Image (tube, rainbow, N blue to C red; front, top):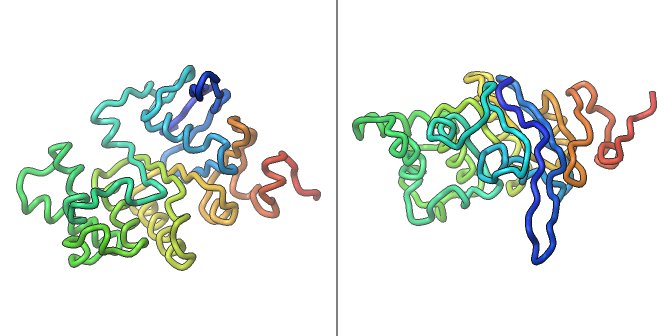
Length: 245
């Protein structure tokens, strides 16, 4: 198993109260697999993802990557990437898109010359459908779909093995959503990267999931394979109701 979290508990202080957000959550993602973490807003999906990414430390429980307990090392940060819902979270508004995409290469010292850097950025930009002219613009000069492609390029340039996609198409028009999803699935076929998709959109989940975990009230309440998703509604999933035969 590539990525696994076991019995994760997490609470936050809200004023004088302690609010338990995650209550014993366990999920796993295998190599070259697309797993969907599904649930309504406020159920704990994003918090669980942040724990997996080691952006938030769990109260108890373990996160394992390739069978080893995760520590937030530089190597882990390289192998595991994040695509946020809002691309502006990942892009410096003052930088050219080129520099935002190239920054991970610089941070991890993966290129030695400007030509190597340019060639790497140009190659990944072409892979995600960005033109060279886009690279010289700032985020405010791109459309929503172009921005999300830039964020995806920034994540992919490190050749990660695992990417958490936190509702990466929810802010886009339907036609642009479909194009971005097709691109991500094509990249997975070519590279073998694994995805954890966070969404409350059941239609999207049915379209991309190899497996799906359903969350409700801070708990993972069920796990479903792709073939088990047809005919289900959001209500039946949250209530753990199966369709009648």
